[in-house]
Length: 395
Image (cartoon, rainbow, N blue to C red; front, side, top):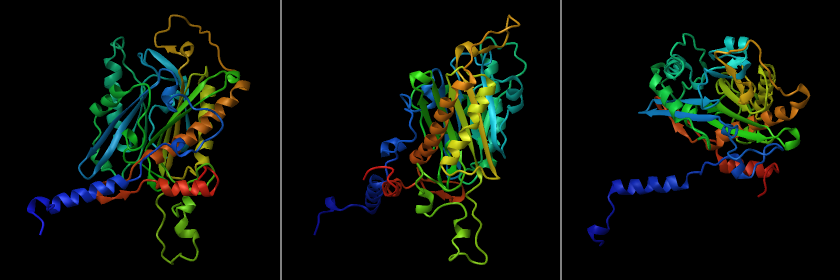
C-alpha cells in the first residue's frame, strides 16, 4: 500500500490533466513559419504595417468574466501632432454595411487628422470620445473646435456582450498610449478580440511588402480586423472545403439537405483594412491603392457579403506631403508618384492583405464567450496536411 505522501489529491490530478492537455495544444504561428510564401515580393523587417517608417500600432484588450470579449486597436500614421500635420488619406468602401465614421471629410479634403481607431460596432461613440480627448489635449490644439475622428468597426456580438458597451473612452486612450513601432501583436487582441473569420476565430493580422529599388523601394504595410465569411482558400488550396466548413455547405451538399435545413449564418460580418505606405501618393492614388485590397480579400475566399462592412482606410507617410493645419502659404509644391509607376504598389497591397488575413487566422486562438458561445481556432495541423496535399508546402 502506498504511503499517503505518494497519493495525489483529485484536485491536483485534474490540474495535471489540464496542464497535459495544454501542452498538446497547437502552437499558434504566422503562416510564413509554416513555410507558405504568399506572393513574390519580400516583406519588411517585421512583416507588419509598422515597417512603414513612423507608423505605430497599439491595442487594448478587454476580456472580463464569461461575456466580455472585445477591445480597441489604434493606428498612428506618425508620432507627431497628427491634427497639426495631417497625412494624405482616402477611404474605399468595398461593401457599405457598416458604421465607419469620418468618411465624408476624408473624401472631401483628402486627408486624415487623427489616429485611426478600430473597435466593436456599438463602441464607436466611446471611440469618438477617446479620440476627442486625445486630440484636444495635445499641445498646439488649445483652440481646436472641430475634429474628424476616423473610426472603423466590426460586430463582435457572438462572443461579446456587445449591448453592454463595455469599451470606454479611457480604453481608447490606453490603446493610443500603447501604440509603438516594431512587431505588432496579432490574433485575439484589441479590436480582433471577439471576431470570427470563415467560421473560425479571426482577429488582427498584419503584413508588409517592400518594392525592389527599380520600383522606388517603397513599403506598403497593412493591418486587418477580420470578421467575415466565405470559402477559405490559402494560396489557392481549398482549405475551407477540405475542412468541411464553408458558406452554403449545408445547402449545396444535396445528399444531406433536409426539407428544413438550417441557414448558414457564418457569412456576414465585416473586414476593416488599414493600408499605409511611404510612397508619395495623393488621396486619388491612395484610393486606387485601397481598391486593390478587395482583390487580396477575394484571394482568401472572402465574398464581401450583403451584411459585410468592408472598408479600407489608406494613407501616405511621405513627410513632404503632410498637410499643415495652419498653412502660411496659399500654394503647395509636391512631388507625387506618376500613375504609370504605381502598379507595383498595387501588387504589394494585394499580397500583403492576403497574408495579413491568413495571419489573423493562424495566430488567433479558440475562444469561449457570451452565453457560452464557442469558436474554434483554425486547426493548423490539419491545414498543414491540406497545404502539403495541394503542393503549397513540402512534407
